[in-house]
Image (cartoon, rainbow, N blue to C red; front, side, top):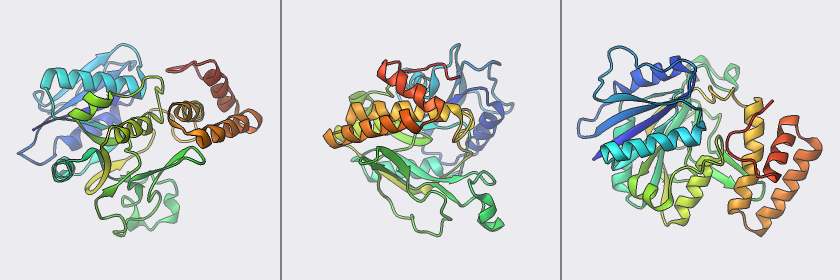
Length: 303
């Protein structure tokens, strides 16, 4: 079994370096894996930190910023063509992993062959919690960011189960999920062959929910594997929650997702949300509606 780990870097070298150094400590001799860093049009070309095994870690350069969708797609195509990988694992560059995270994910997949996408338990990186002042110091680093995901079709929203909760074992069993987060997801090769990669029209945000819906419709399940642990700094390269990029792409892609997958009730909800953006949204959300109506997808200027 061979697993290719794909990490997209965009002008965040320090985060990527820390992520790779944690991956260098990953255990599991029975698992063969390689790490492909897609340098996604960074101003300064990314170089691997010293001391990493060049046979296991490598960099693929894109001269243009292809977004989360295009950067990961480039890494997926490259890894399968070069390594004929059985699995591809997508991992955000602003993460740090437990030494056994990959082994545990692989075990979950082998024990549950009907699951095409499997995600680990993801905590906020210590000190990056949304409400860090509300937690005891001993609780920092064990506050949940993702413990499975649910889709609210009535309100056209996707949310993380357990987010902001201190982990007290309430999500310690393997279970199904409505969607897999692109922050860290193990994908079977056969899933990619049947449903394809990310839809590049999304560019950033909702692309993982779209891939998840397509995967489920192809007959696969989506799983949450709590034995595998990752810590996430959360939205570093896009400016974080509430930034202009976040507002724009969430609004536009929420509408795109609805048109692509929603039933009649969801489409009605989409019309309601579109009007809410027009009348009460920020200027970035209003621009997102305009671009949605003009079918201006993919990367767009946000000013």
